[in-house]
Every structure is written in structure tokens, then in C-alpha cells.
Image 1 (cartoon, one colour):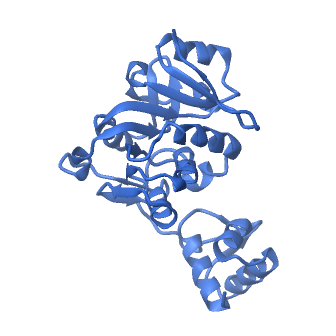
Image 2 (cartoon, helix red, strand yellow):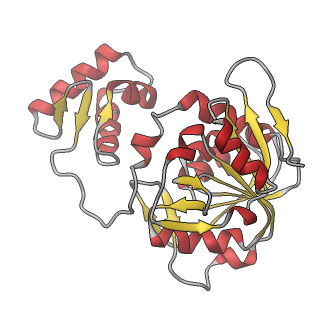
Length: 268
């Protein structure tokens, strides 16, 4: 890749997130860390970005109204092994031809890799999910309409007359800010408004949540536990959290992060 093209990619990347790491830029450009560090140093000297420890940041980040909660770029670096295992178990629930909804998020994004070999009808509000599946699969993709929130990489609309109402799904797959006795929790009212519409279009709701989500709380409840059909989590789930899920008559799937297959337990 030519230096000019690398510089354009680097400058685009630093406008997309608070800090972009050297490793991120290596993955984007396909060149070595040494080359990326030289590029960052050059662009820093040209005052086109600011060099920081381990990466770079924009000198003047774009200002826009964001959503509550951690940015996508931060979330995607956390508990990656657990998220991949959970996503693999979720994809196993999908069959060719299934109409499904995949809500935006860093855990649900990991579904794109096992779904690359499927031919499902997929509705999503996630730009990264749609883009990846369009490039690397034969799935049929439908995007929701609305505003793109860059930090969370999702598309949300405050209007009822968007395309969401025209899609039926056998299952909806989604993450959450937290899960507790009151139900599924989210951090932003706009997220809840959009996700309620999506949930209403699906027969079954499948929640992808690593075990840390059972200890997190938010002031906003998206839906009660009674609306959830399946929860997929990792081996770190506590006995107390597992008992809560099973008491609510929810199918609990514990995905192994090792070589073992996912273990499935259905509440009696």
C-alpha cells in the first residue's frame, strides 16, 4: 500500500474513535508496526494528528450528539474471547433461510464470522455488521433507516414509520447494558425506543451477554425477563445469576471459551 493511501486511512481512522491503536492501524492497512509508527510520526509532525502512547488521536475530533454508554471502540476490546464463544453459540441457532434481527453491539458483531457460511435474511441496525456480511457472506441484508451514531456504530430512528415495522423475524439477537431481576437494562432512552420496536418484530428474543453483565445495572429497563426466550453467556456466570435466569423459565446456554462445545440447559 502506498504511503499516501496509508495516511488517508490513518487520518480517517482517528476521526472515527477517541484513540486508534498501532495494532488497529496495522489491521486496517496490512503493514508492519514499524511502518505505522513512522506514518504516525510523520502525520504528527505535519500537525494532522496527535501521537499518543500506543497510537494516535485526532487533533480536532468531530463534535456530535452521542448516546449514553461506552463507545463501540472501547467495548470491542473487552472480554473478546467470551464474546466470540457466545456469538458462535448464537449462530448455531440460525438455519439457512431464517429471517433474523441482529441488534448492534460488540458481542452481536462477532456473529458475522460464523454466519459467513449461512444464507439467512438479516435485518440489522448495525453498520459494521451489515458491511461485513455484505462483503463476506451470501446472506440477504436489510438496514434500518435513521441517524448513524458513530461512537456506537448503530443506526437509530425516532420515527415509527421506518422500515423496522416491515420485517418479521424468527429470532432477534441482542446484547444489553445489564441483566437483573427487573429484566434487560439499557443506558439510553433512544436505544430503548429503537430496540422495543425491533423486539416487537421477533417471535423469540435471544440475549447475548457475557457474565459481567449480570452484575451491571442501569436506571432504564428495556423489557422484563418474561420477554426473553434464551440467554447465552460464558462460564463465568454465577450460580445466583443462573438460578435467576432459570427461575424466569428462560433457556440458558453457557458457551465454553475452550475447546468444549456449548452446554445447553433449559429451565424446568
